[in-house]
Image (cartoon, rainbow, N blue to C red; front, side, top):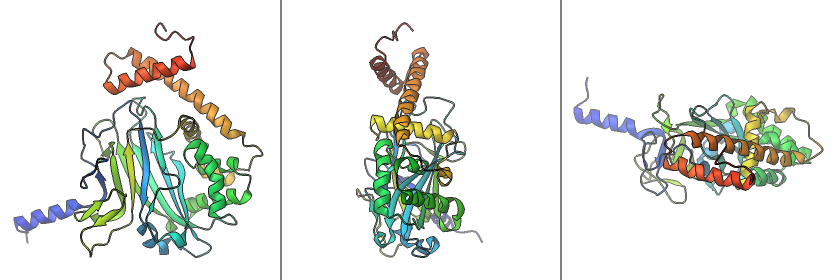
Length: 357
């Protein structure tokens, strides 16, 4: 039997409210559909973009701790990782964002240890290289061997300082402690080999134009990624990054809040090192190979990465400068980028006659 019109409309509205991702403008406001383009928030070519984790809800641990087998077999540490693919999601880049003892996981996590998911300068400079941005977050509990979170964080902190992110495959080069390398190896091995004990949520942005497959436009905002479908009609996001419900009987499912911003959050040297690491990842130095690496005797790789990143960045700057110089009509973002590139190249190569080249 057909539903009455009013009941049918209500059913459609209920279906629309059930989702796994919602967006809140960075300026604040109510939850909105992330698949609806806000022209004032869209990120255009030649602009910078950063994606940062703002919150990991306590429910990510409390609701899935049985699946994680928390507390069993030494699985006493909660870990959150991300995998990102930009234009080539078949080779995602793996990062570690948080390591916490499970006894401290009864509360929401904000002010994360390593919040940087993605940081891109002059995004979309190559018109043919970016088709979408795919982000996956993996939550799990793991035994980190003879290491402890303090030792692990102290060692990985040096990598965070120079690269602005924690890339597991670089761990052997930033620590002289075998227990630290073992701890990182165990985390990556769990993600690779025991997927049934890992909980994942995935989201895809489609930049520059209309999406062909229902992916969301790349735009600024706070995005709430729920691990399960939820009715969002009673939910709101506070300035503190916490989701709350006006319905006292409503249970809020596990979620992560990420901010998408038009800015670079890494310092210049961090950006160079991070850029070099991303390049190595795409060309086969995969983070998942940490378990196959031997610990080196020198820490010189970090310096080499920074130098390589600088050279790569300058090559990108030069190519982009001449590309924009030949273009007839520049957007305001492209004009600003062109001026920035010219200044950077003049500073680095004062003898180079850019105007007549």
